[in-house]
Length: 342
Image (cartoon, rainbow, N blue to C red; front, side, top):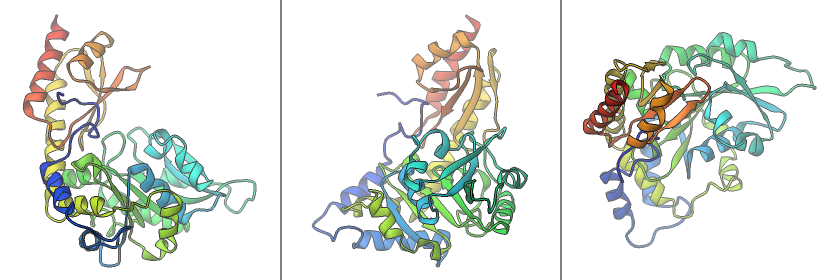
């Protein structure tokens, strides 16, 4: 099957990840994380997020988000997030179902919250008729492919903590953000004041698996039970942990993300000169957003499938992956140019 621009979830696994899975598939190992791969991977995550960080591996991104939120929320609590946040748009109400709480979505032009927007969403504090703000959740990189600079996260952390709230980072594409910003994972999370991180792997070359990283370890109290209660405790956890060790133990995470980002920039650069195509967001990770002349959308999807982002405005989303090639870009751009001029 040919490569497409629908999602980085559509790509296969990196060969090094597959090799790690095969290597882990030897003999017996204790279940539920009591194995050498999980112990090693947890130490690797400490190298990225700090010695104090506590990591728990889960099956998927929604599972990471809902269990992370459940760990620090009660049913009368609320989460402030961007209107476009994955927890608001693409998790089928799971955060609200599992926490019993409420999401407070905030409209943003680029998917990014700001201290001012957060302040405006903190209302009804102490009033028993209103859900009580408890968490601020930001996505790095955002659903619009934009990124928070470390100083922006630090400013958000300051206002979040000033109100006694918890800062959660949905890092499904956190590696892409770090590659774009030229910083470490810790510099834009631990050092910037984040409290909990959902650290992604599946979008960056893994088969499956994500991690919940508690930068403030006291927030992890009872999380082992939250994870089990949320159906996210893997019995054969070594197969998730081995992937994390292969991805984050060296610089594969950075290589994969940097390549995907480079392909996105190339795609945007080549497409923006074509009549009927307008790039709508800064390309800061591996996603490109564009308004495309309506009659071009379906023929281009036949060349390389992708998703509509906003049907009303004819805005589309193109996502590149660790295995996207310049030939994939050339084929798509060539077809777009021919269709536009035809």
